[in-house]
Amino acid sequence: MSAITIDASLCARMFLAGAKNLESKKEWINELNVFPVPDGDTGTNMTLTIMAAAKEVAAIEQITMESFAKAVSSGSLRGARGNSGVILSQLLRGFTKVIRSEEVIDAAVLAAAFQKAVETAYKAVMKPKEGTILTVARGGAERAAELIEENPDIELGVMIEEIIKRSEEVLNQTPEMLPVLKEAGVVDSGGQGLVQVLKGAADAFAGKEIDYTIEGVSAGNGGAAASASAAAPADIKYGYCTEFIIMLEKEYTEETELSFKAFLESIGDSIVVVSDDGIVKVHVHTNDPGVAITRALTYGSLTRMKIDNMREEHQEKVIKEAEKQAAAQQAVKAEQPVSLKETGFISVSIGDGIGDIFRDLGVDYLIEGGQTMNPSTEDMLNAIEQVHAKNIFILPNNKNIILAANQAKALTEDKNIIVIPTKTVPQGITAVINFVPEKSPEENAALMEEEISRVRTGQLTYAVRDTHIDDKTIHAGDIMGVGDHAILSVGKDIDTVALETVSLMVDEDTELISIYYGEDMNEDEASALRDKIEEQHPDCDVELNCGGQPIYYYIISAE
Image (cartoon, rainbow, N blue to C red; front, side, top):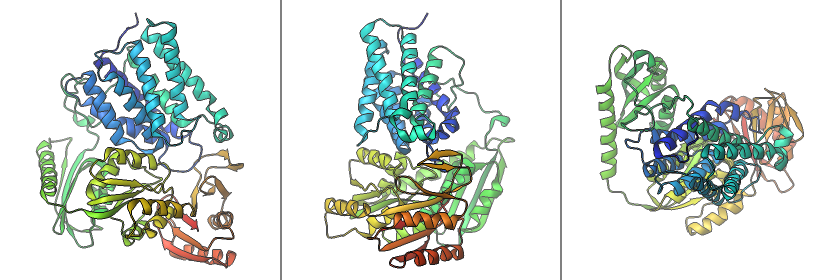
C-alpha cells in the first residue's frame, strides 16, 4: 500500500537518494551539454550544489521537517555552482519554504511545494529561458496541481510517478523549444539533472535498497543516513596523513595560498594550511604524499615532515590538533579590528598571468575558477568576507558564474555588493580599467556595463566530443574558436583557427586586439601569432599578455 504522507525522516531519505542518483549520472549529464568544450559542466555543477546540501542533511542529529528544510535551503544556496546549480538551489529553496512548517507532507502540500519551487526559481533568473530546467520543473509542478484538482485524496506514489512522467515529457520537448538543442541532438542537460533527482527520490519513497551514505559526513544519532561504524582500514579513501612545514623562500600571497589549497583538494582531503611569519604548516590526507611535497617545494624548503599510514594506526589526535590550529587562526583574525575602505574588487580568475593582471589593476581578492570549475556561492561569500570595503564590485568573468555572484549578493547584508555581469576575462579587465574613484558605485556600475558591452571575446580550445552546432560539424580533438554567442571557427591548426576567429570579431571600429596565451603555449608561439594578427589587421594595436590559463590556448579580445 502506498503511503499517504511523508514524514521528515522519509523526506530526508528521499532527498539523499535524489542527490546520490544525480551524482551517479553526472558524467552522462555533462555529455548533454551543447558546447563540446572541456569545462565544468552542468552535471558537475548540479551535483556539487546538491551534495553541499546533502552533507548538511546527513549531519543532522535529530531530523524534523524544519531542520531538514533549513539544511537543504542553506546548504544548496551556499554550495550553488553554475547557472544550473543556482537554479536547482532556488527550486530547493522554494520547495522547503512550504514544507518547513509542516509535520508531514501530503499530496496537497507536495503540490504547493512544487509550485513554490517553480515560482522561486523563475524569480531568481532575470531573463528566464524556456526549454531549460525551469520549463521541466514547471511541467512537473503543473501536473501536481492538476492531479490535486482531479483527486484531493490521490496516493502519493501515483502522484510522484505522474510528476516524473510529465517532467520527462517536457524534457523530451526541450529540443523543440531551443533550436541549439535540436541542432546538437540533445535534451536540456539541466532538465535531465532535475529528472534524475526526482527519480532517485521516487526510488527511496518506494522503499528500494539505497546507500544513503554521504562522503565526508559522520551521521549523528537519529540522522537521515544510518550511522556508520568506524571505517575499516580498507575503507579509508586517502591512506597517508601527511604533515610538514614550509620555510618560505618565495613570495607567498593570499592568492598563492588559495591556489595551493585548491591543489591539495585535488589530491586529498582533511586539508589545513596555516601560514604565519614566513612559515606554512600543512596537513593533508592523500594517497600520494610525494605529489604534495613536490608542489610544496616550489614555495621553499621543508622541515618537520611526517607521513603516517592511517591504514595502520589511528590519527585522530593529529587531525584534532590541526583543526584546533585552524580554529585558533580564525579566532585571531576575528578579533582584529578592521577599518573599511570605500571600494573593493573581487574577480574570478584563471591562470597566474591573468591573476597578475587583475592584481596590478587593484583587484583585492581573486577567486580561482572560470570554465574549468565554477566557483560556488560559498566561495563568493568567503571572498566578500575577506574584502574590507563598504562597496564591493564582483567580476564573475563567465556567464555561468553570474547567478552565483548575484546569490552571494542577496545573502550579504553588511556590505554593498555590485555584480558587474562580465562574461569573459577581457570584459573583467575592461571593467576594472574603467573604474573612476570619484564616481559613485551606481555611476561606476553603469559606466562599466557600457564599456564591457563593446568587448568581443574569442577563446581557442579543443573539442571533447563529436557534435554539430552553429552549422559546423565538429570532431573530438578539433580546435575551436568560441565567440561570445557561437562557435566562430573550427579546424586542425591553432593559428589558422585563431586568425579566422579574430577576423570574425574585428569590425571597422576595432582599435585594440588583446591576446592572452595559455599554459599550453609558449611565448615564441604566441609572438608568432601576434605578428600574423598585426599583418592581418594593420589598423589595430595588438597586445600580447601571458595569461597562463588552462584549457584555452588563447583568449583574444577585440574592442
